[in-house]
Length: 250
Image 1 (cartoon, helix red, strand yellow):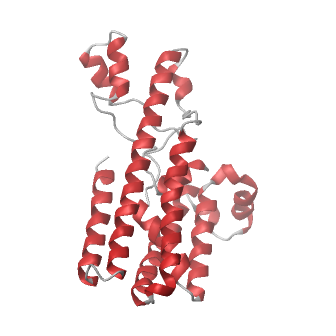
Image 2 (cartoon, rainbow, N blue to C red):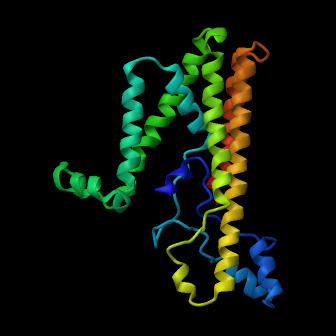
Image 3 (cartoon, rainbow, N blue to C red):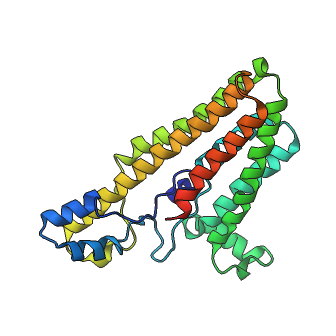
């Protein structure tokens, strides 16, 4: 279930450089450059429950912020069905992690047993969350700023605060992966890999935090009248692209 947070910080799976802490740890153990390069290119950095996966899905830190913003600013019934559909899709994607609900759906919901993998249901929140987010931006633009400034700051605070909470929680997490058992009794190597996973997770969550702050600042100064609407929206689109491109290259 914790893997759900990959929608806001996507480093449950990532490639490792030759300058990483893991590579340095291998050097200290006497490994050669060729061995290190070969290992870091194949090391299991994914630490979710699935033994075979190409990695979790990344929604985008900014989209999650805009989704929360939409939850505050959209007043029509549209908000509720988009939120409900997003939550429903996420719960379905948990599969065996919420077996009672998912087996019920498998047995009684027409066509559900045709899905190759229940994780495919993340397509539902991937449609609904951005939609509510973009409607939320529209409503923010149309809203009276003095009356809704607190609502905006609440949305920003919740999303940025979630990133800070995840960073704090990471210091007590074990970062154990389903494939760790394949490494046998090499405890020192498992520890190096888990430390690398923790470092990657924190770096990516900090990255998400700053993207949320940047997008929030753009919208804030737009409503303050210090940035023209057209420039603000173009800047927001630019920040979105800057968020997605590095993740897409992983």
